[in-house]
Image (cartoon, rainbow over all chains, first blue to last red; front, side):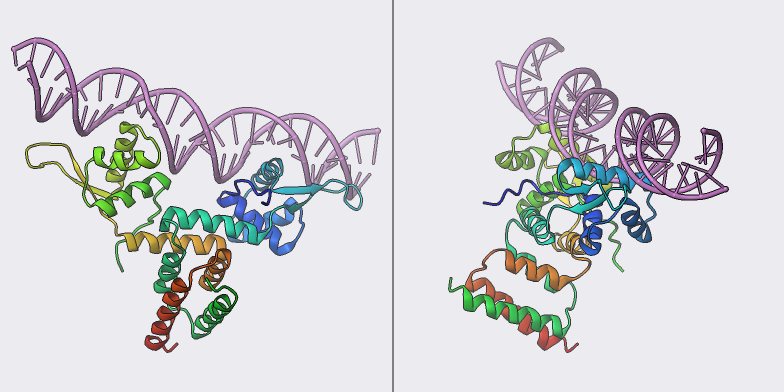
Length: 133
Length: 133
DNA sequence: AATATTTTACGAACTTATTCGTAATAATCT
DNA sequence: AGATTATTACGAATAAGTTCGTAAAATATT
């Protein structure tokens, strides 16, 4: 249906997307500063990735800023879209396609808070109401 | 606590582990036959991977079979262990460490069956009983 | 305008993962 | 034993991802 291709951002690409999802359209410098807080990264390294992502269509960029300044990059894929795609791949690779297996494992590995549990339960209730399968 | 290191099997390594978890200890030939059902794979390719995994300690092997036959390889990491580790990494990478975010996304993306929902709910009930946090 | 700074473009080095060819070794068959 | 087949070991080619140096171009400063 959607024109979504093989969305499979690499580790580094995902990190950059996350910054852009959070901050909105940003320059290389801005992205690099955020990334460097977690892990020191050379400016040209970040630049290179963003250029590659631009070529792939993961990002777009506006050349003509206010007064001919640096490129401003913008994510061209939605967070939910990427989450969905990565989850699909992960569930297929690791849990043989079983979503419930994934969820049981996820719940089992750490102790979710009471609040988290309630949140999930509520979500499940809603699902059942709207989906009589 | 446990001596678990950085468990991060690659795509191909995971596929091999899955065969070994399912079949139990097996020869290269046997593993390769299973893998080839899904995706044709050269014998020496599978062999190479299993040798690498042996070097890494992911697999062990018995040299002295019944009558000096081929190596029989065995997974040296448990399925639950690897699931756990991969989930940790995935949740950190993609969902910023939030398990409930992962779960909500996973539930939202496809329609789980009524049965699956019940299964999960039951699991949540148990969790709440045993964990008054 | 000359110099310095910022940003971009290009390309190369390096790493990890994947794939397989080829040769050596071991076992089996005639 | 000699030939055939099976299995292992080794090394190399390719690909994808990561990292950065260097140079060119654009912008700002003195």
